[in-house]
Image (cartoon, rainbow, N blue to C red; front, side):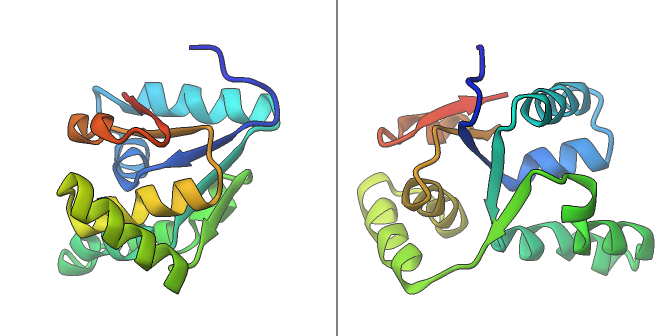
Length: 139
């Protein structure tokens, strides 16, 4: 799929895990997405919920290198903006959860993407393709 100049893409947490932990099935795909978006001035966005989802396992494992990497993720992906979880996001997330029966974190991600008028939502969860308000791309 050809990404258009100046569009906005929402990235789900799992893409960051695949990339930074060098998942053999996805790391190259995610790296190519990062390169293409950087070259075309495409904005990448995600929720600050990312921190909660990224940091649990490295903290359990006491992996300081990964903890430091994830807590400063914006340094490594310059066209990435992390957005706060607001009341507006949570209200919309509750509507998404009620309508689609998605898990709360997925609903928060989708609500953030919709409020921010993302052109695409990139992730790896096939269930989210059922969401109709944004084009969901499963990698």
